[in-house]
Image 1 (tube, rainbow, N blue to C red):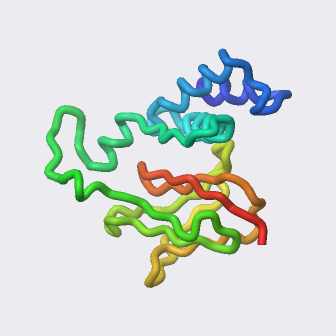
Image 2: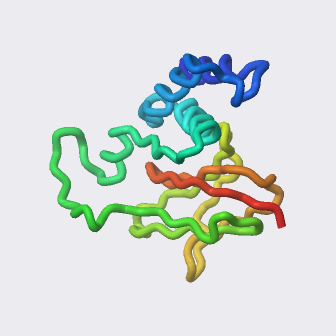
Length: 160
């Protein structure tokens, strides 16, 4: 349902031409749980990050619980300092990036999404000493998102 709403809002128009009501609808979708509401949540997040001058980290409670492997109502044994983090470098980048995760055992796969939420590349952990290397060959300059499980980071690709 939410993907239909996002598609209808973008149909025949530009992201920058959304009115305040349409922006509010897209923002409300961006705050939903992507595990239950699907790819439309990531597309809405990409749209909101494109039209907002400030970067907002749209994270739903379901993602936080998944990151810490805690079911609702349970207490976590993980300390705040042990929070799982993802680092991208270099960022901005033009040829390749390295993805480093603070807890290597948590990595299932790395996914690359366009700013509209379209999945572009699936990387099955090409590990190096510096981290997981992802080639950016063939990608146009712009804003992208890297996702591993519930972790997500913004990536800017520049031209050579």
